[in-house]
Length: 391
Image (cartoon, rainbow, N blue to C red):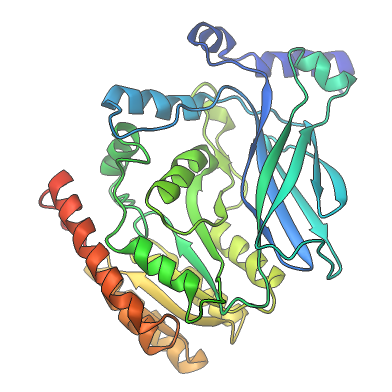
């Protein structure tokens, strides 16, 4: 059995990997908190974040060269996780201390028993690094500092919630073409990656629903790793897509320690969907995904687990004929058993027309969606002429 001194030596060795390179490059910094967007309702709240030992990636710009984008991508994968570190989260008059896992990620859950101090849709949580003798030993340059984390609060005025996939659903990723996907990741940033045509206007319409008094929550679910959180957050913000929690895959990739690549949850999307449906028990959902991978199967399973909770499913057709045939079979089954429509759509306009027919969005939103779709298509053709992917 290892003694305390051996543990310390191993911890110091692990935390020093790549330190010389990072220090010379100016990348090595004190432990700091990267907050993720939390979510909850009047009863429960989930708050997440990460503790890392590295400076932040430079904020992207359209004029960045390929080499600047490559450098930003490399830095995302060189960032050093801080495992087994305590952080204190304060929210709604409550406080809880939690510990980061082997990937530097922390999770905190609060139960409010139906009592929230504020009814605001967007609220703040305060997160502190908890400094003690043990972590000062490992990280002598640590500084105490509070950071704010945004929390999206779902209230009873919401008509429904929206859960959307990210890759090849809101952002052009070519997820089934590994080399093309890698090129997009390396050579582009949040300002130069292309959204699918009309996504911003369509999701804004879904968020607004059919009444000015309604604000429907939007969640983003992806198998992308947490390394890409800042890129995806910036992409959503830059393209004026409604803000919401990003629920990424519990996997971290580190260039200086490839052995640390590990998937904690193999069925990531299923488990996150189950948690959302179980937490927000009074909310029904619209699910949006694409035909490139397994979204139809995952969404169909949620329909079976939570009968009556899914209003509709929109699957973007990315042009794989054999997948289209499989989706038709899945769609027919859940239509017959649960009266839930799974619609395979070629573009955002088709999804919007169906949403209008079902009373999910107001008819007045159709023209802005079509206009934005055409504008985005022109931009896409300019940047990537001859693309066969449809929006």
